[in-house]
Image (cartoon, rainbow, N blue to C red; front, side):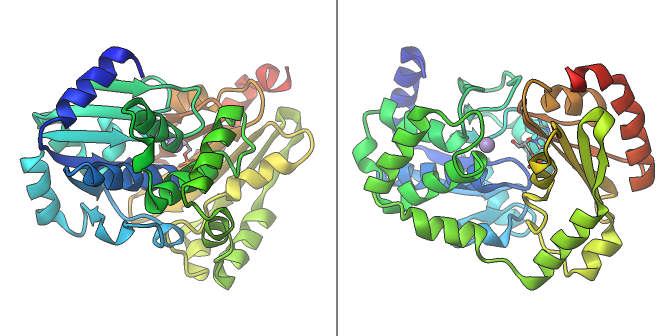
Length: 338
Ligand code: 5GP
Ligand code: MN
């Protein structure tokens, strides 16, 4: 963060504010960890703060400290609307464009308040009074740690805050292995452990609470995997019927896309997941090396994200979407093989 932004934030927080903190739709570990960690920090500074999620988030994150207090905009609509109406400051975390907030988009566009963005995705839009955007960062949680440090408040990090920030860094770095994981990231998580994050317990809560139906669904996903060696690409499809047959719950498909990248020689992995309720195919893109899935998702599938991890969607049927994907793939043949 630059000095001017730090001064602006200090001045905003020197007065009592009504603060709302918002993650992107379908919040993941980093979105939830950064919002919950920041919320607890702001409350420790005697600010009124609440987290409002655009929609629900996966069960494997529902143990996170303070998560019981989160308002889901779809479910606790009038309460959430009231908080938004009264808000004087709005933090937007782990996204950088209102279009990522689903039903909240219009409210945020109209809302007069001091917006503070903390985010590590590409191409931030320009809506915030303070934009703390850094695409080199492992996670928004690491940035919230930096934010607290910049305010000279690291000693306010208690075990609840540390646990939330640790969780988001762990999930967004694939347990500290993706390219964005720096030595600094490790220093931050080491400090979070010293401040009370129980690393083994967090890992267990997030990764080792599988249901049998989720593992069976993974089996279906893996047997559906199509490997296209000439494009160094592997993709998975899951239809709504397959999801229904395996008692699908939000978050169950988290991480499935990564299996494609564990194949030797594969640099691009994709999963197409049918969502009949929303009438879309939700797509996740992952890559290793220089192939930018952010650009691919932006260009062809209404999405975006990071260089090596991005998401998008298609309004076509799953079959048509896959056919279109294959046609597009041909135009990237050289790039994927370079
Ligand atoms: P996932 O595939 O896990 O949903 O998302 C991978 C990454 O891309 C995450 O950082 C997520 O926030 C981002 N992302 C997912 N969908 C979209 C999208 O539609 N637009 C943008 N800009 N980013 C997305
Ligand atoms: Mn993130």
